[in-house]
Length: 398
Image (cartoon, rainbow, N blue to C red; front, side, top):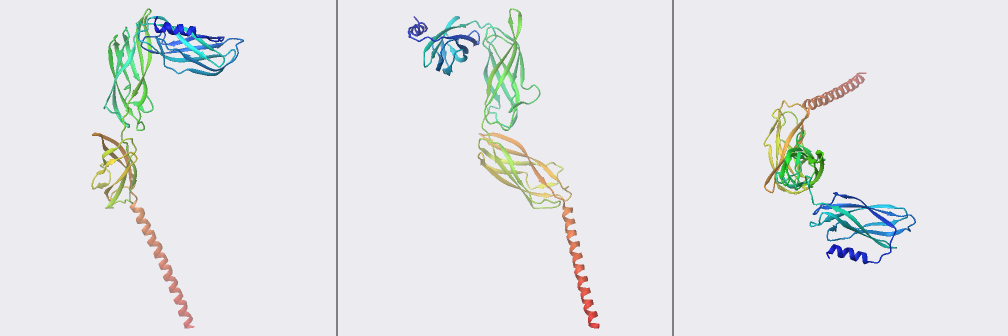
């Protein structure tokens, strides 16, 4: 007598107060069940007319030699007359489970009574269909980090079934943070994956600057398989997690400039760099790339920022700049390159700073205006003094 038979015998010998609940297996996924695979079994319970209310109900799958429950028991506060409830349980079908019909046992306990349900489910060990599963997952570079483009992903898909999958299309699902680098870069195909064979699909994607955690996505498959009526199109979805490494994220968070005017020299521009990432940035440098047409002469365009910038830290560097005399008054956008090392790997990203040049003629005009007003006031004062003295002189003559 095997353990399964002993379990059933023990269950049958337990004295129970029988309830009038009836149970039905609504579905299994997959159907039929497969040895060595996880599965879900959905059960319906129905309270027959005239049955009294059950309280504190707990429904538990019973472990046997062939089925190992994974889910926790399902509970109900009450089941009243005429109620219909459902429960879904995750199980594991043992590797040595034979093909055919096997028992699926459920134990129901309530304040008023207990009951055991002996249901039957089907198992097959004949995998005539293709069975595609993800194997190796590789990325280039080995560590994918945020705010990067043209990352490469290689996925090895294994066919564990006994039939070839033909005209396979494998599409990587786009997310808010994982997007295609170019048209159809998240889509790949294979003419055929034979039984017990494999194929490697490749994809190219961009990763947003906001992502610092692993990405959960799916591989959406479509392929043809043979059946009695010819080829049948099958669609399947496989879960996939793409690791994302911790990395610094350098940004320019502040730019301080003096009142830059055409022809001015000895100006100092301050640039503050902040690490908003999740890892230390080492040997940090910032480099400016002003357009060749811009009216600036920088003493140097590269500055050493810090040996280490921890997450949340910042540092400020200065640039000495001369403004050419023919500079037009406007805002100049200058591209900056922020560079650091991460575990000896070079990490770069670009940002932009704004350097404004003011209108020198406007200031000259203001000085002229001020001088004109002062001259008018002075003339008015002198005229006033002249008129006063003249009246005084006329009075003395009288």
